[in-house]
Image (cartoon, rainbow, N blue to C red; front, top):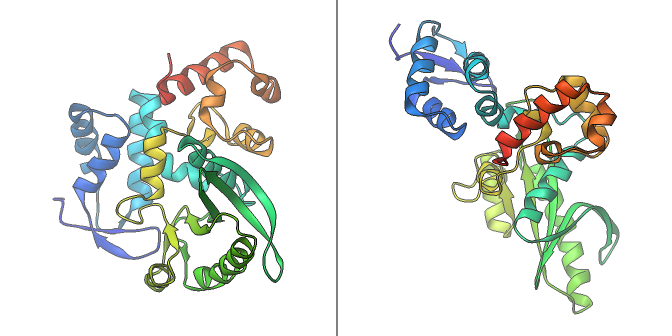
Length: 277
C-alpha cells in the first residue's frame, strides 16, 4: 500500500496519514535520518487502511527500543503523561517541576483565600512580581477533551482569587489551565476572550506543554523503559516524578528493592535520557 490511506486517531476521528508528522515525532526522540528511514520502511510493510495511530506508535516504539532505549523513552513522552495514574497528583507535580525549570518558586495543592470563599489551587508559581495560579486538568485516556465548562468554572475561581489579591494590594495574579490533552474550540475561544492562558499538549502553537517540557529537558519516570508498570506506580506514589531523580544513587532504588544490575541499567538509561554523563 502507498501512503494514501486513512488512520484512526485516539478520539476516533479518521484522517489521512501524515508521514512528516511521524518523522517529526521520531526526530524529537533523537533518532537521525538514517534510523528514521529504516523505521518508516519497516512500518510501511504493516500499514493498512484504518490502522490506528496508537498501533503505529506502539510499533515505532518497539523498533526504537530495540535500537536505542533513550530514543524510545523520549518518543514515548506523550504516552508517559497518560501513565501518571488516575489521581492527577503526579501530573500536578510534573507541571510544578516545569515551572521550577523556568525560575519560578512553586507550591502545590494550596488552599488560597478568595474574596468570597477559599479555593484549592493545584500549582501556585511566583517569580519576581509575577504570580500564576495553575489549574491542572489531567486525562488518563488519550483523545479526551477539556470542554468549555472547564474554563467557565475555573475563570470564576480565578476572578475570586484576583479580587482578594487586588483588595490586599498584593501581586496581581494570572490564571492558567494546563492539560495533557487538548481543549475544545469553544474552550479555547472562551480562554482567549476571558484573558486566561490555556495550555494543552499541542496548544498554543507557541508555548504548548510539549514545547515547555522539551525546553526544560524534563522527562517523567513513566518514560523509562527498564521500569515495570508497578515500579513506576511505586515511584509516583512516593512523589518521584522526574527521570533525573533516577540518574543518581538514592533511596528510590531501595524503595523498589532492586538488584545492583537493574539499578545500574535504570540509572544509565535515566542519565542518557537527561543528557547526564
